[in-house]
Length: 266
Image (tube, rainbow, N blue to C red):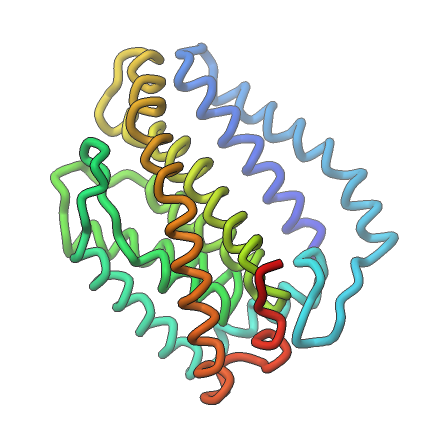
């Protein structure tokens, strides 16, 4: 069952990445070619799944893992959503994310703003894992559209970006050794791949960009510079917030002490 889940993820990654490229280049039959791209990545992943099944990745104990590629890791992440206390805490973090989005600071790069909501998404993903992180990202994006309309029509792409951000945080933070380098890696993936790359694609689709040059211009002049400039400050702030809150989380039984004692620079 878990192998089917992983294969589905590979298919979806192949489908949407192929679809995005073909849609931007205006190639005909992009739905068909996207399906073929997804199927190709799925077939390429089968040997990897076979190797994974032959040799399960090791983990230290039930509280800390060396890698997310273990069945019990995902079982633990799913169990987090079955506890009432966790759901209450996740709801509180969602509210804090929405409040943080009300205080958006100008970034100095066109219409892009700065928000501190990513801190609360990082906290939720650290405590409850990648599944909770994706759920938080999806709900916050849709609540934000309903509560604070920006004038643009609803577009599912932004929800996908928010879910991917929660997934990345969860995979790198949940039940593992947490370091500044992991936080920097998470912010790098989110800033560059999701905010700059996907964000440019989503804006072009919503604003009906007429040529690939318009996508490229926005990416080079707005999306990429903004996310590079704020990459290190955001990583440093998130590191110190999580490190400071770790003691509190342990005291109120939200975090295992094994995780708290493994927070460092490397």
